[in-house]
Length: 232
Image 1 (cartoon, rainbow, N blue to C red):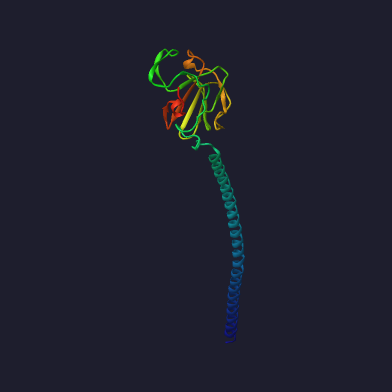
Image 2 (image 1 turned 90 degrees about the vertical axis):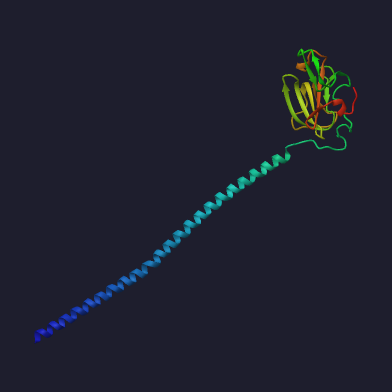
């Protein structure tokens, strides 16, 4: 009987110890779990915040720089388009057939305007002559018939050095056979301003020294003397 009682006491004591151990282990697990979660959250939140901030800064700087460059490029393009000359405006003093126009050289005409075929001694063939050839001497000054904008300067195999001027009112004049030039593309000239000096016209060098002068109104060749209100 005594032995049975002792065994029961020992069993109860062992059970109590086991229960306490289980409870203690549970408490340890509980507290360790709750304590570790805030630390992880803090680390995650800090890392996320830093990464997000860095990404936003990188994107903002890149986008801002790109926008600034794009804006500057657009402004530069706009300025170039604004400052680049286009055409000569028409006013009271440059209306074709009505306003006063100055002769580009002398009043003497070597060869008149002709839409019909006429014999060309230099080329030895028949061709139209859509210009007026004004007589002069090599080196004479060639001047603008009216205010205008120089729209082209080039060398032509048939007509030598050529200057094209927009005189407003859709009137464009071609000064052909120049030796030296006093203007360049984009230059504005006033009536009587020097354009260059007289040289020669390769396609008409059998004729006297002259300025081969053409006028084009609204895309169509017209008689220079008519459009300037002059008579031959």
